[in-house]
Image 1: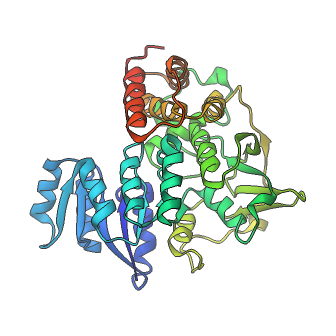
Image 2: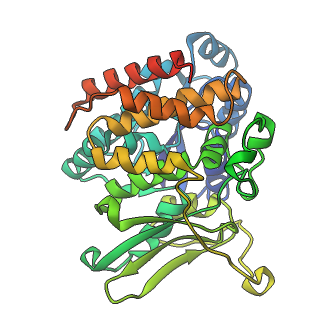
Image 3: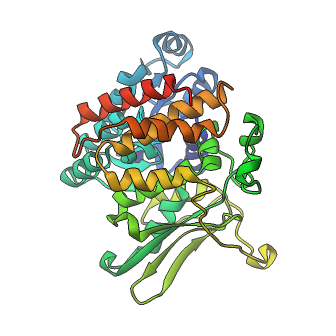
Length: 381
């Protein structure tokens, strides 16, 4: 029986993780749940899974949970609650599926507590990959990727000597506006941007898919997870989202992991690794699928991906700025304060203003994150 805590339990990854767990009650016990403001869903989860620890976005929401949760549940709130559950709920395994840099402290706390990590929070590695990976190595903690792309690479590398990797090939659907040229992106709406053709995801990650920031974050993640330089991590457009990523080896062999777009598959693999168990996902029928398409990445069409490579190669705090500026810009777009194309302009503007700091400690990263958010909030580009 594996004891798990889920940080971000009401989000897309969190709810799908609980769906996977609910199908294997003999294997998993949910000891902690943490969420933001969706208190109604969080309460449903509390009654269904009966965790000992729960955290809500603020103290007012926590009070409501205290009033309605079963006796004996310890209820916390805010960032302190996230960290407390990550480090003290007694979990063998912590699923970090929070959106944004809010997940960094709790991810580090879970690693320090010796819990293995199922990582879906991109920003933990993007903003502080050197700190996260170093702490995990020192504590003997496994970090298992939940993103479909990184799970695919992880699966392709099972039993392989990493020194024989020639390059990683991360696939990208192209997002909601993949059928549009740049000149057609002026005036696109929030509603249109949220209609992803393949995946069912939260609002922030769906917008990131449309700008290709999501793929930029994944490239930076891959750098830290698999230890390869950026010039050996490529991105290829693959609109069907059937091939989730590929690994090319020095002998020119290419391994790929394929499957229908269903996040429950990589989530389940991360939870049950190294075992494979029956999945609720629909099996892939290649005969029915017919044809798969691949195209080279167009950096002129998707400049946010180019910015990610540049930030990654710069290193230090540049990736923190990239992630934080994007987070604010996406939030502004979702509130309809700025246009879709303004997202990339804000990221570029804030990166241009930043004087990079190499090998930053956690305090420096958090200060840089706050600075980038302030700059992105004030940017009028």
